[in-house]
Amino acid sequence: MSCRCNNANKSIECTVTNCRNHCDGANYCSLERILVGTHEANPTMDQCTDCKSFQLK
Image (cartoon, rainbow, N blue to C red; front, side, top):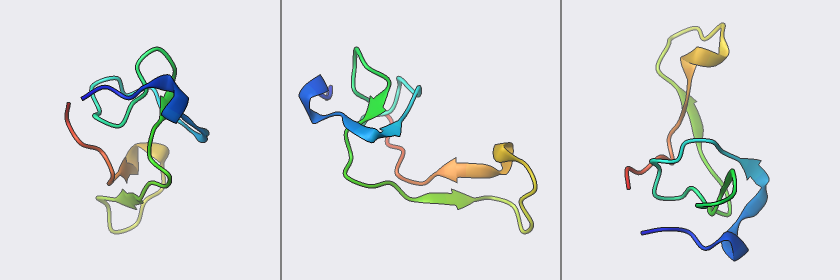
């Protein structure tokens, strides 16, 4: 399922093109909001965070 760019949420930039919510042709997410979480007990770097709203295309 591809996002039509008219559904792009300009408040959420995203470059993960293999996500179902990515707007093809624009680096935005189509969701109204996302959930950001962590896989670390004490995150100290951006690599420790995850987009919990990710869905594989």
